[in-house]
Length: 224
Length: 216
Image (cartoon, rainbow over all chains, first blue to last red; front, side, top):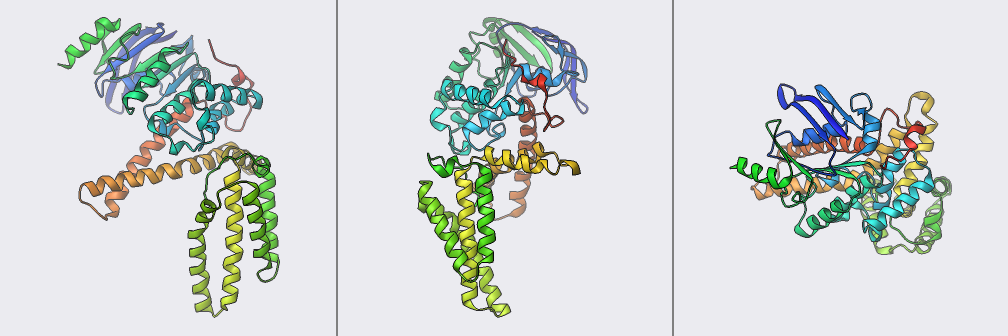
C-alpha cells in the first residue's frame, strides 16, 4: 500500500500540493485534474522521484525519503513522452537496460527480455532502432521497459496523451491486463471508467475521491 | 561512421566486440605502416570480404563513406596545393582513410551498442584508480549514440516550426527553443533513468540487495 501523510510540496515559492493525506490500496486508481493541479507532482512523489517538502510518503512501509532506491524498485514509472525514457538505440538493448542497472545475472536478463518481447508484441522490432518506431510502438517499448522490471506498482503519467486512437486502445488494453497495482495520471476520462477509484486534484488539494462513477461527473462539473 | 547496428545472422555479427575492435586496431597499424597504396588495398580487400560475409547491403554501407571521403579529398587536396605535395600522395592518403572508415563502419554495423558499451565499460575500468567511473562513462556513450538521431529530429521540428512562422534562417530562433527542448529532455531523461533503477551513486558497484525481484 502507498500512504501519504500530511504531504506538502512546492517548487520554489510556488506551492503545488497542500497537506495531502491518502491511502492508496485499490488495484486501479486514477488521478484526474487540470493542468497545474499537482497531479504529475503527486505521481512523482509516489515512487520517490521527488521527495515531499513536508510530510511522508511510504510504499509498503518504505519511506521514499530514506529508502528511495528500494521504493523505485517496487514502483515503476511510465512517462508521457517515450522518447526521453528509451535509453539504448535498439528495442532489445533498451529492454535490458533496467535489468542490467539492477545487476541481474545475464541469463535472467535474457529470459526476461525474451518474455517481454513476446508478451508486448515487440519481437519483430527486436533489433530495430527505437528512433525509427512510431509513437505508439515507442510508448509500448517504454511501458515494456518498465514492466520487464516486474514492479509491484506501476504509475503512468498521461500514457495515452500522445497516441492515436488505435494505439490508445492498445495501451488501455495492456493496462487492463496488468496484475500490478496501477495508478494513472490522465485526462482520458473514458479510460478510467472501470477503475476502482478516481481522485480529482485542484490547486494541489483533493476535491473529489471515490468511484469514477461519482468523481468523474464531479470533475466535469468543476471544469464548467 | 555512426551507422547503427544492422542485424544479420553472420559470423562477423557473432564475433565479440573486443575481437572486432582489436582487429580494427591491428589493420589500422598495418595500413599506416605499409608503404604506398598497399595498405589501403589490403584494408579495402578486408572490408569487401567483411561486407560480403556479414551480408550487409553494400549500397547503404558505401553511402556512409560518401561524406567523409569528400571531406578527406578536400582536406588532402588543399594540403597538396598549399604544401606542395603530389597528387599521388593525396590519393594514397584519401584511400588509406577511406578504407579505415569503411572498416570502422562495418564494426559499428555488426556490433550491438550494448556489447560495445560493455567492452568500453571494461576498458574504462582500467582508469578507475584515477577516479573514472566506468559505468557512468559507458552510459554516457550509449546515451550519445541513442540521442544523436533524436536531436536531429528536434532540430528538424524546431526549423519546421520556424519556417511555418516565416523565419527561414535565424540561428537565435533555432538555438533558443532547441536549447530549451534539450534541457527539458535532459531533465526527463534523468528522471526516467532513476525510475528504471539506474542509480548514479551505485553505478559500477555490485549490490546483492538489488538482485531480488520485486513482483508482489
